[in-house]
Every structure is written in structure tokens, then in C-alpha cells.
Picture 1 (cartoon, rainbow, N blue to C red):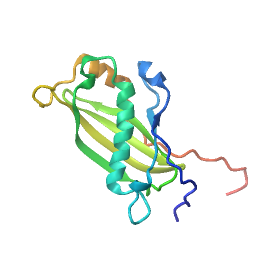
Picture 2 (cartoon, rainbow, N blue to C red; picture 1 turned 180 degrees about the horizontal axis):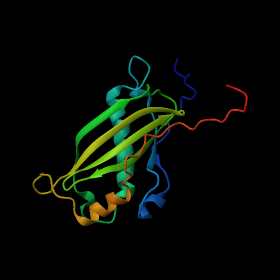
Picture 3 (cartoon, rainbow, N blue to C red; picture 1 turned 90 degrees about the vertical axis):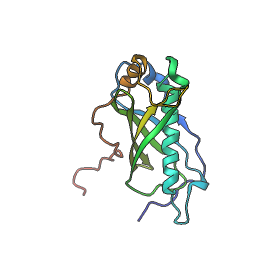
Length: 175
């Protein structure tokens, strides 16, 4: 049985503090708190699977606004070349979804972003997107330059495990 809905307010998108953008390496991913809208639900009372991709997009845009600053191609178009999404539990209206974002791979013309989401203490999604930067004049894939690779490298976390809900400790002798 899924936990009951505990809140009906919509929480706005807000990213965690800006300290990550200045680090040379990370020990934890960027976290975006993404609000679930009433209109995200389907007839089954949970967030529609296509709308989950939109929640991931909102987290990615918050990450991009903070992570990829300070180089010439910041306004350059970037497209999602591939999306892989695994649903671990239905997402329901009410509580926001906390989505962690980190770089899992940096190639010559693309990079992979990894995502892990939790709602109300429960893992709800794991995802990845392959991102391809485009040349603004001709729309073709272009190579990542040194500044971009440096920005992406700061967010690289090798084989990061999906986030898990925090376990509450129980007194000894109880099970």
C-alpha cells in the first residue's frame, strides 16, 4: 500500500546552495527539489510517466544553470540524444521530488547525466540522459571544449549509487 497523500500544496523548483559550482571535485551530486503539479497526475492518481521526464528536465535545467557557467558555449543548444528512465515507485501529488543530478560520463561530443529521485523518503526513479551539444550555426553535434570538459569534470561522480532514504534507528531489542 502506498503512503497516503499528506500535502496538497505545490512546491516550486529550487536548487540547493551554490557551493557546488565552485568546487574542484564533488563528493555528492547536485540536488534539485522539484514540485509536483496537480496536472502531472493521470487517471490512476499518480504522476504520468511522460510527466516524470519533465520533472527530470526541471532538475537538469536547475543543474545546468548552476554547473555550466563561465564559458563561451553556455548559450549553445544542447539536446537529449537518449533517455533511460526506471520507475521504482509511483510519484504522487503532494510532496516534492528531490532529484540528484551528477555527471556519469564525459565523451568527446556528448556527456551522460545520471539522476536519482526520492519522494517522501522513498526512492521513486533512476534515470540517465545522454546530452549532445550542437554547433549554433549548423545544428550538428560539436566537440566539447576544454572549459566544458572542466565544468563537467567537477560534477563527475564515478558509479554513484542511487540515493536511498535515510533509515531511522530503532531501539535495541525491537524488530
